[in-house]
Length: 292
Length: 321
Image (tube, rainbow over all chains, first blue to last red; front, side, top):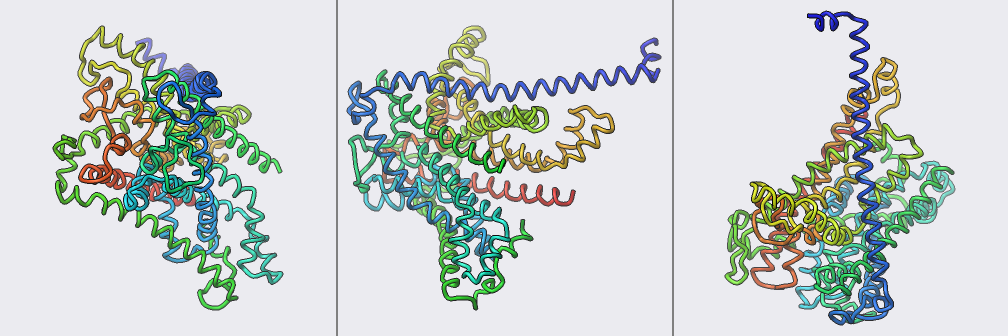
């Protein structure tokens, strides 16, 4: 009875309800903080372990020897393979991706452009293992030969939609006045696009390409399906298999051998540092642009 | 955005006829690349269907429900892997969706900007870490931790509990789901944060002016406005979770069975493809591995389409508001 009366008394009621509301607010704030802290702690744990275990495995042997079986080998073939396949993929994907981005941003009319935009989004959303299967069916199965070239093409297909979509977004940010000024000077449209608009957006496009490279450098599944068996150092022969850092991590992490496991961590460290550096550069650049 | 599209194009070249010859040539070059992108998608789909034709003609749709994957008898069924993909993705989403939403709320609504910016960078960094590196951490650190701290004590005390199982090796459904959850959380956070940011500050201020607490403002103003964008981000994350290959292949234990418990090993569609690929490069086994790819493609393409529709819907409702 007294409780019911107390609840009916309005001034008390308001204070009590406000207390409950602030409590709920604090609980939610706490949960949100906790969730964020959890995510960041896990990230920290990953970086810490890769750093510690990777530094232990980062030996002269890892950097100078090719794959030779238990205890003896190193990651040289993998490092050199990645250093060849990723740039080749970039050579294929960057021009096509930038042209694709221009097409989507500049000439976006009609059914073809819509279909192209849909295709770009869909390819970007495909699991990379499917890209591996595709490249296997067109470049490996017909020749009966795994090859570094096929690996590079697979990486290029992964980079292509990333570059095209982001270039489209960046080009849309170029102020129309830049375009209009160039056209008003009588500069042909294609010159306007290639020398004026692309130059205005150059920094952004460079950023996008760097992120795509970072992504391709860590891709594993497509390489497992297109270029396996490259244990020896292979320089320049894209018709033969090439090893890569991600594939090296995959194979060596499963081996019952301490040296190889340590080298898998070392390869992870190399990849992680590369990805971190690219992302830090991109981030500082975009903050600089925002300030300017 | 759609309204500004027309103005991007100078009027004298907007028609396919007219304009300078060099402009027309450049235009054709661009169009060729555009058509090439469409052709690439069609090519991927066609080659996957073609490459798996032998499996579909041999087993038909019973490939999807077949329980046995036995290369020595040339018998192939996809059901254990489909079940594994569904189980890992569902578990991962049940962790990633709440964690992602709460994190997005923290970064967008609670944390001061000076703290939020570096945290946003860190969360997005997770998405940039190669999945094979996360897989290595999963198998070298997380599964060991799960085995020693959770699974072995649990099994010792309670035995073989339904939905948990008694294997306790650490490389199992639980480890795979946790790794997947970690990998898709940044996707949910990034997109959800973006739709939160689009909610007008004035509407938040209005509720604060009415005496609302921060949570009430979020619940009444922010969450309803961001709803379809948030759901879109979840569908996108689901697509990623189902297609993720390396990290899952490294921690799921790789046993071709319908997952029977959190502590039991399993296999997903993509991990099966990655693991079994090297073993054979022709014949019905390869065809069946490609057929697994077709199943994965059907699922992921539909998530892309669904996301596209939902994000379009959220843009439209955002414009209406």
